[in-house]
Image 1 (spheres, one colour):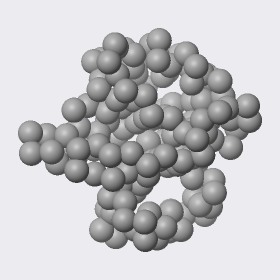
Image 2 (cartoon, rainbow, N blue to C red):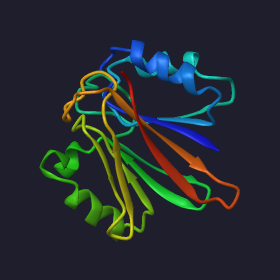
Image 3 (cartoon, helix red, strand yellow):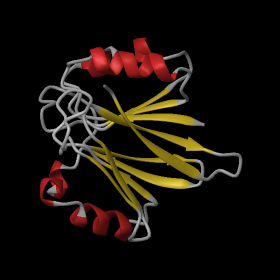
Image 4 (tube, rainbow, N blue to C red):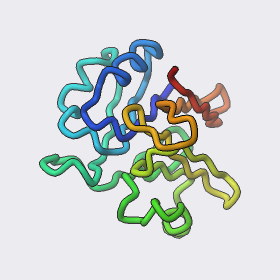
Length: 162
């Protein structure tokens, strides 16, 4: 199973379209917020049968998307959130503690526009970064791919454009 994880595209969709096209076919696309209206169009850009999982970000003012979602992928319980309600701009500690307390295996967030991956607390916490307005050193647009192998184990790769 191949899952594309993106966030913070802010309706600047050219990089998102490139990333989708380069990774087709995908089984699922996860968008962690701040699509700013593009959530209505993204399903048209992926292959048929691709499952869509999206949450609302702090800039998705008129979106009817959920604030957060709880999903299951294989053997993993996953929390999807934009992250601003967990103060992720100050660090991922609050999100990590809350997700662990709620028995999630993986927590995915956006908001900071910086890639992040940590599995030191018995839970995987990740942020794919931003495809439109990256803020990390080097400022390369970024996304993640999650793949489940034949044993159902998750593997994550961070990717950069440019």
